[in-house]
Image (tube, rainbow, N blue to C red; front, side, top):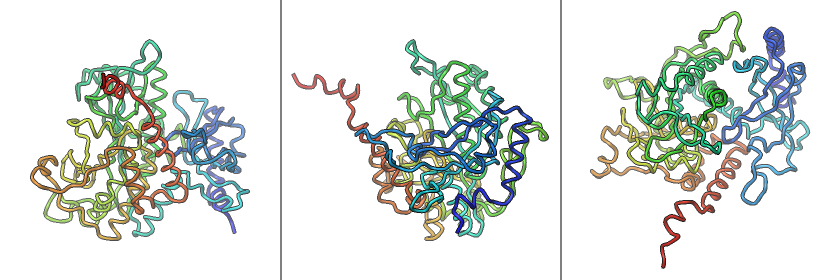
Length: 492
């Protein structure tokens, strides 16, 4: 019986796509290839190979230690997180569809990869590697769609980030611009930076639609068109790569840390989502020559049309249709556990504690209500607000699907939409669950929620829990400046 790996490399049409990539390599003078995958925390990992070896690696893949999916980091005790040195090596198989020239050095191109267990493993040799968050999302989305008669998730993300200056010691410090929200002059001060980001983004298939200066120092938000959940996650990952490169070119730092400064807004990454039947992929050149693209045509496809189950189907122009509403009921029901994914770092919870900056801290929903964890941001889509720019979008997508699936299966009612400021509603007597207010509390909520864990199949939940529990333990085992300032002289 063929393994997952064998079926993947023998898929119909793959050989022709491998040839198409070779033609691109030769036409564009590509010398080197980045073979990329995404770690548990969202870091881009992988290997580089000379383009001469494309056909060999396309068929056989490359090997790398399993621990690379955990960033190859050590825990507090000095042991490798997730996998020890005795673990086997994974097999990474590049996906020809994702071939893309790097616009900042046109001698290089990148490809995303799907990960597999080693061919010589005693258990499930050549099977899909479940510590591959990107591969998990693809498979879970396909399973969700098959179960629900073709229903598919579309997502648009709003990544906020800050452009910081370096201090005299080479450390990122202050924001490049002033913390004035929506001010065109502050936006203009970063024009060379964001125009370069736009240039690279459009070359790499991101259909950029709007941008603005947010209300923290150096904080910009640039958005692209929503799409299938996996393709959008790939574009968010690509966007982060682009920003890091642009920062190097301009001598400033691209900061996606959630809360680098208290007293100003954090870097959120709202997820606007909707569930659709039907639709078809359509090509968008995005300013590129359609006959001479810098990447494979698939990079420039966006899904269009279909039946949006979140659109109103009654007299109320704001109320989502029932089919979409029960999916949202699942997300509201599991919002506490989902917070461990959307707010994935110790620093994420500084965002929730810094009151007055519209960070959502309650598991409720409403219309245009920024004090709740979910809101109807426009007819036909929900904005999931309890997520920040440190998120792994692949695990976020997988766990959103798991929660939505539970809502559909069990017809979960999200309750009446809250139109009041949630703090006023609570003062008036409303009982509302609060989101976890620390990473430790969020990890416990995730440990107690078997439904959300379904979005972290195989080894993924174990690995995520181990990595993040160690992160939380490191925080709790650290004496901070606040500790010293508060307690050093508390007794005579």
